[in-house]
Image 1 (spheres, helix red, strand yellow):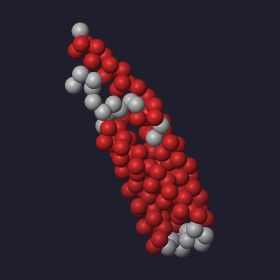
Image 2: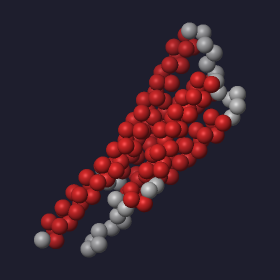
Image 3: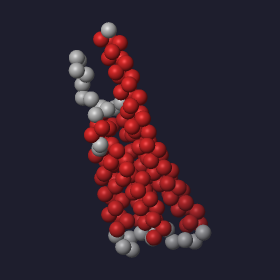
Image 4: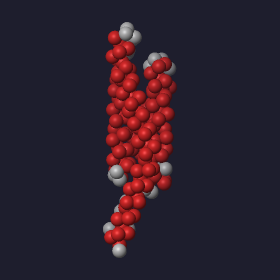
Length: 147
């Protein structure tokens, strides 16, 4: 009887985790797509004669890498990994802060890149909030009571 109760509880918890993290996965998927689109558009813009500074290439690469990393952590967390949730809880606010700083530096990046970065920040903000909510953390208990 205890085995059945434990497996049922685990199944319910897994379903609740997936449901709670579904919006996070969608937002981070959009973050990856937008970051990849920016990086993919740079060679085209350069070929058209638009001045594409090296800072845009570097920033775009870092942002895409951070987006992919966050998405990997979110997928692992949705599958039940406590350590992936912890990484997501720590890194998402750091990425958000970096985006805010970069967007707020006047003249550092062209306005179209700053706009793209602002949209990326708008995608990461709810992720940072959702993964740090007490109800989300509660879906990842440290140990089973009888273990």
